Image (cartoon, rainbow, N blue to C red; front, side, top):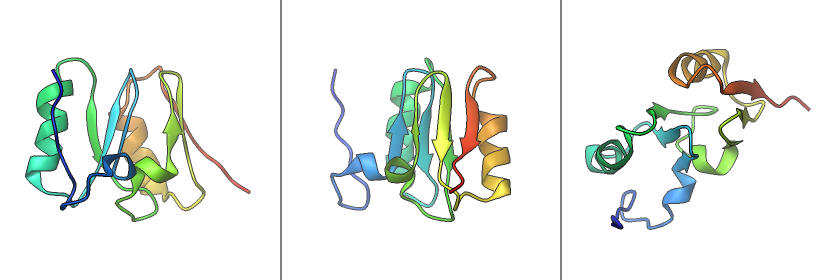
Length: 99
């Protein structure tokens, strides 16, 4: 069954969330309704993690990943990396891309 959601009136939810078959990243600072859609639909299957990357809410635009790993840009802080590593499954390797 399909579920509709939007982020503060914006239907481009891929900017604010990143979903793989092993985890879901959802930006912090969104409405409880936006986060709850992901939590209700996915949490029984995969972890749903609220996070920011580089202090921004656009996690879907700047992160890329699959069941094996997650790449984040060099703007990601050490604290954000630690949060992601602690929240995602052990099989997922989190790495910051440095130029």
